[in-house]
Image (cartoon, rainbow over all chains, first blue to last red):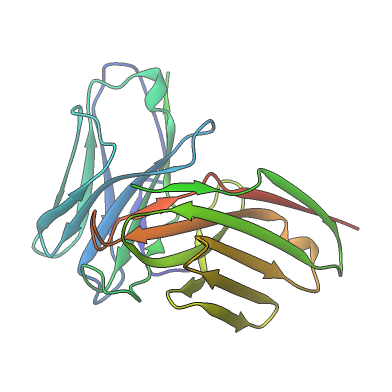
Length: 115
Length: 112
């Protein structure tokens, strides 16, 4: 158990819908990262937050957005869902922005299925 | 950005040794990580290298050569539970201090 929690574990929804994935980082960690992992692609970085502020963006679609709240938990919002959005979504956390030795610890993931 | 290459799959026998290679290209290397991921589960941290040389952690060791853009993960005394995907990830300081670029992963199959 990494100490990172994610809810829900599974999510089934229909195309065109909107969902929210939630992540709570490890105690003391200020950075949160979101990743998408689909069967035909590896782990793709989406976005990073540090202490409430966006710090880096990766391959995140405009239909997706995220935020980190004052209590440091983070939410990833996915809207106008398409079949291709079906994937495992992981949240990871680390202590800081990252110094060289910052290690990211991953949550158990949310498996999203869009029908 | 980075290009990260690692073999797609490797098969080895229980009790044997397997070496997973990872090559990368980056403009501002700032650390290389190895993660283990069982199917459908979260990646779990195995090792970190930022300086050249070998880091040993029990049955797992990781090596880095920055001049060659090369790393390997060595798994010794293989056990059935080591069957998993092994992900090489590189941090590039010119892009973002925290962002990791992951390779596609190497699926290791351990046979009896």
